Image (cartoon, rainbow, N blue to C red; front, side, top):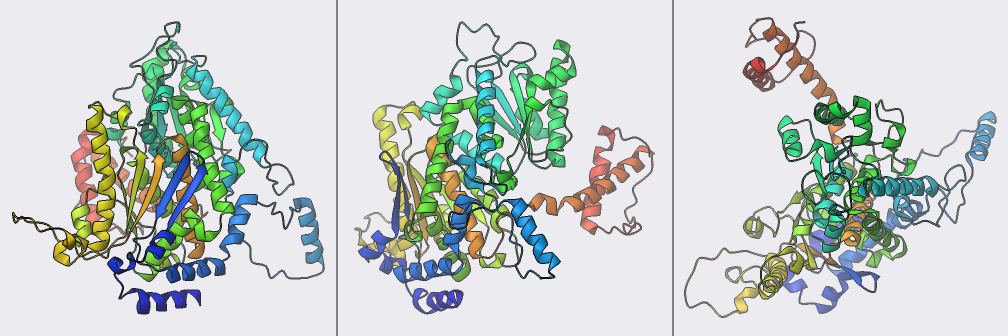
Length: 616
């Protein structure tokens, strides 16, 4: 019924309205601007006033959320299995009760509930407790891993854990793919623009009393290898010194591509460093692994392997585990990494304790549902107006694709997130394109321009002022249109010199997300905001956000079949046989598209001289 009401409301009441009219209602505008104050000095603003909605629309959406039981679901996320209103029942008692019902031939009518990922527990501070199914404290293992990460990272940063040749470890290559790696990439790029974080990157490297030899410059770095692409691998290691490099493999479930890429870097390390010790010693000094599979086959010793806690076995919500925290702690230090965790925890508290009417993740998720399901937008474009936020759209796109991109009701909400480019590079298309995509504009009030720029202070601050104005100008242009389209710009005096100006018709929705500055604390807030938003959006659309099926695993079988066929082509070529153009691909029951066969055949012929495939 809530969906039907919203459909009628969108068709009969919202469709005729234009944003230029809606934004004249000051009460509506002020009611659609929400502020989250994490503490006296930290602020995040979400401005939805340029969305094609009224206060009545928002009330309808809140009723939909209530009908879907969002408050109860948030409570379960916060408390795990230890809901204060329904205390945990230990498994031994639960099993005894189940056996009793079975012996009396009673049939249970309860549907099995999807397994939840209690990801909020990954950033709860010490001194708290969350009971698991056995009645024990589920946070104990999480805080134990924090202590391990702190100990290992400080040992590396102080030079106690050094390379096999005696050099200090200062560069980290992260091998892996998926949401936690994209989150790490966003946070790393953001913190490279932060003054405090940059101090952490350099700490200890230029100490003249340090007796260790330094490889390269005086700043720590993180490089990323997300595929087995040999060109990308060469680019990742091109300017690195193996003697001062740590390889961290993020192999959640033993992903084959991740393991192959890890093997490539392992060979690189051994080739350069095996002269300083045996292979096992090199691996022990220069390789670590984070995995969710306790049985994964690895040559690493136990101290170099971090296993994900049970609350994070869903790869999509494993950002606040060793997968992200370990590389950050090595490069920036544990103190700053802990600020990242604390920022996420403050957003968690806001998410759990705040009424949905003023709850930032809930409001943003409901806005997505409104645009995608009722106004047929099918996605949104995120445009950062700060260099520190440049990698945030890619993280959000990966997160929502894994969270909202599956299920029979996925058509109700879109999981498509498009990177609009830094400073909204595609603005001309957005002003006049036939297809309207809602925009999400992101900005920091303090871009730390004095630290990040080398120009004179007055030039730097003037550029920052212009950038702030550009954000609001872009949002207003999307909403109200230009003079030629009868928009708000028609109030200005006409220019005496005629010039060609692009015309925008307006009525294009946008949202503004503004934080005070993009440091480690704000990065934690933004990551948690995106996670909660995606979960709420999935729940409302009746999609399991904690599904463990990834997009790459869906195509895995087809990839393996094609690889077998390609290996067969190389084997024929190695025996001096010709690849027939009309080869019957269905002879083994595995039929492939004609274009696929043709291009693979051309690839095999082109690369045959560079391969040394054994004759089979």
